Length: 67
Image (cartoon, rainbow, N blue to C red; front, side):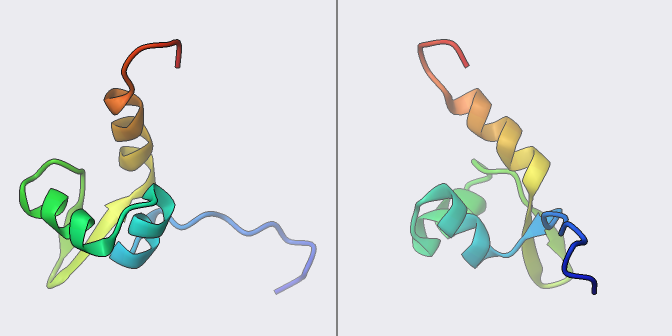
């Protein structure tokens, strides 16, 4: 790959990546996933977190102020 080629962000994040990006523990993320509180998809036995869905979810969680 050419070093001048911009990299695209991953469309689906692993649990570790999603937890790190959200600044929460993986245990908290799993709890939120199990309760259906946070958007996720299952690919076979794998759980992934769609970047766009997480961004929308974060905006929906905002309270007060202009976002």
